[in-house]
Image 1 (cartoon, one colour):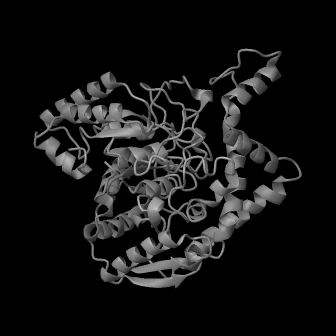
Image 2 (tube, helix red, strand yellow; image 1 turned 120 degrees about the vertical axis):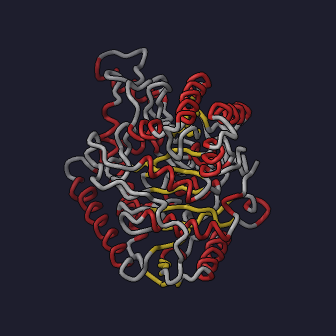
Image 3 (tube, helix red, strand yellow; image 1 turned 90 degrees about the vertical axis):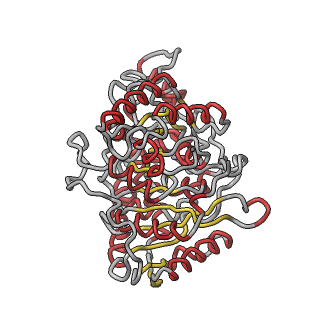
Length: 484
């Protein structure tokens, strides 16, 4: 039962072959038996209460396609009934007085909350090793990282601990862990999914999205998650749409842009081979490969690591030990309380980004760094606009390598930053992007570590992306494979 997709589970629930309560209990049992550290907070009584309410809805016919299906939330979305920690000691015991819009929307659709998922502290990281509550293990190889910051979300899907999870993507944090864990994830166009109730990292980049087994599953989740929210000033006013409306459309004549910068020095040979094999499958489906250039790709790392820390330093200033969050037990005066509380409450990576952000926003450096980064960000977006005049979608690797060993880059933050080279530019431009499983690495160690294919679309073309991914998943079985 735990291997089934959302559409399959929905059919079973609506035909009364299984109840929402039975399904929730099945996943709760799997979570209890897992040692991956993917879940931070689970309340079986609350989950089963929601499942019982879903069963009432199913019996009355007041349902959606998602009614009764379990979901787990990245612990960056606040919830009233479960702690919301953002993976940080600063918020270790925080319980929100309200639900995030994403959480509320999925609850209204009848989904059943399984718990909260581990993540890098305040979503800052590429390996899920920055969590105060310990690293998540990759289900395919427990000696490897699951990717980050949404490592818990991706690992839970891969290990079949949940059929659906929510996640966030600031610079690749849906796509990269989805790639490392061999599952499907989509980051929609910036502003498509409400940020209200999402604990902020970088406000102009943060975007919520789903991770699941298949593109079809992601479309079902996105149907419920997306939409205008007056509580979020960055939310876009658009008519509701069915993101799965174009599934099963032919790919005959589809133009796939292949950025030469994505296949340069630094890309591991086994990752390139898996991606090239996937592109060959698309050619069999009728698509045409088009050589394109995204010349500012290499600038995306310095641009991102100026803009994101600058916004983080502002967003995280609210965590001072006064209003909410951790407060130090011993201090001399008010300033010392601030200092001690933030020293104890934040981890090393969060402190590093706050310091970098404060520096680039300081007098004398704002123009030289922050404004210059914003100018280059616009040029990156223009590169994509020019590319989409030549192609319909862009494809390439998600990351330069498969997942690395736990601890391998713990002492080298720059090495972690470089791992985001292929995902950052999409986030800086605000474009939708996906990762779908397309193979595994090579060699004794890497042969059990997945490779993801990245799909990038033009603004608001999520439906096209999902169909392009869906067609690939109709002729391959990478998305059906599981480590358990």
